[in-house]
Image (cartoon, rainbow, N blue to C red):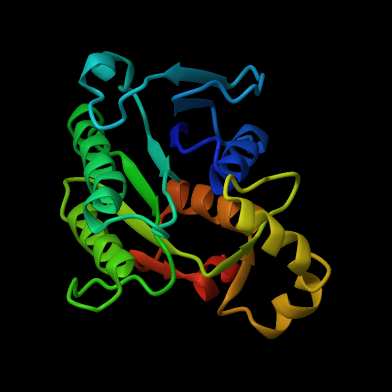
Length: 218
């Protein structure tokens, strides 16, 4: 399987990159990044591109792909709806539309979030925008899966770029082994999430929207 990865420097993207490089079924990983990850591996190629909202200059390098793991995202805290929508919806759809055109048969795995509102009418701004993004992806001419994890405990050195998330994860780390079996519908970890993304990209899943419980079952 030839994988393209967006968001490789974020916490979930770091996990997706690690598990992709470890997975014997993954032949190559193309990480589209603004800055190099610092990772070195025979499977990995990094494509540095500054403007994720316009990938047309590198269109010819985005072919021959089997699966996309789209882990790019930001917290909505402190952002206007217009700015959050640009990052969450506009950039995602720009990349997805180009990949669909360049790679017939591509499987697109999108990391959304628990509480996403696919009615697009709720009060929560981030949930509406995520829901609009999910709906648009599911309408594109490829097979798409929406992952809606709740709380994600980082594993194997994966680090969030958001400071207060890092503090939260440090506090919860000792509690996670106890809470995970008790709350499988709400808690997962970055390793489980990444492995399930790869499994679904390769083999599919019975439904297109996977919540935390589904992620943990896979």
